[in-house]
Length: 118
Ligand SMILES: [Zn+2]
Ligand SMILES: [Zn+2]
Image (tube, helix red, strand yellow):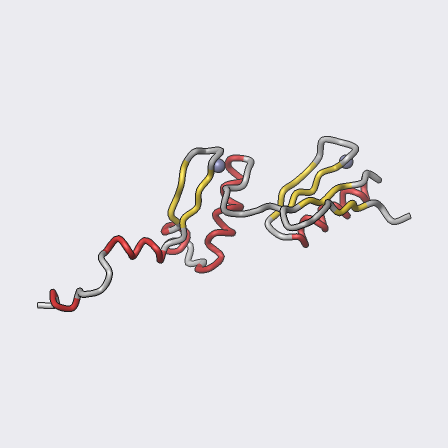
C-alpha cells in the first residue's frame, strides 16, 4: 500500500525530533518524550527536565549551564537556569543576611558580586 511512500530517512532519524539530555554525574541520558508527550510543554522541555532533575538529584544535567549564586559568607547557594532568578536570589539573600553573594556563569568573564544596598 503506502510502502513506496517511504523513500526518505529511516526511522532512526526520528530520534532527532526528541531532545536528548545527558548527565555525566548520573552517567545517564534521557530523551524528553515524556516531557513532550505527557506534559505538552514543547520547547520548554529541556528547561523543565533540568529543573526536575535538580529537584530530585540536586544538580543540573550537562545540557544546561546554570547560573550559580554562591554566598561568600555562609554555605548557602543556589543554581538557576537564568540570570534573573539567580540575581533575585542573590539580592534577597544579601538583603536579609547582609552577606555578599557571587553570581557566576560560564558566559561571564568574572563573577558578579551582589551586596546589600545600604
Ligand atoms: Zn544527574
Ligand atoms: Zn549567606
